[in-house]
Image (tube, rainbow, N blue to C red; front, side, top):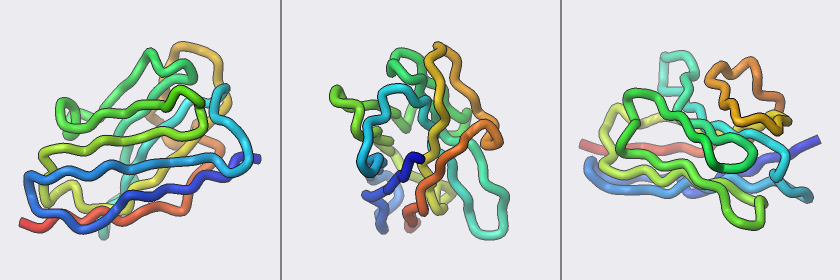
Length: 126
């Protein structure tokens, strides 16, 4: 069982930055591919970014590419989503997710992810 805990959300003005963190409770994430998803009010949850287990393959939604960066720390105990040039439309609850995988692939369909955090709120004011 993998328990994920997100942190780093908050309120920021448009154009600002936030860094979200996701840590695993009691274990490393070394054999897990990781993803970030988000859900805005009244909308379905959507893919934001993903990274493979080694950290050498990443993928991003078109809406965030060039603004967001997904990374893993060297100890494989946490992953991060650096969000720059934030826009009001980025406002959502952001969820960290994981699935066991030692391939280079990354998956964007949330149905492939087995473990989820509780979410952290990101609000971008105009």
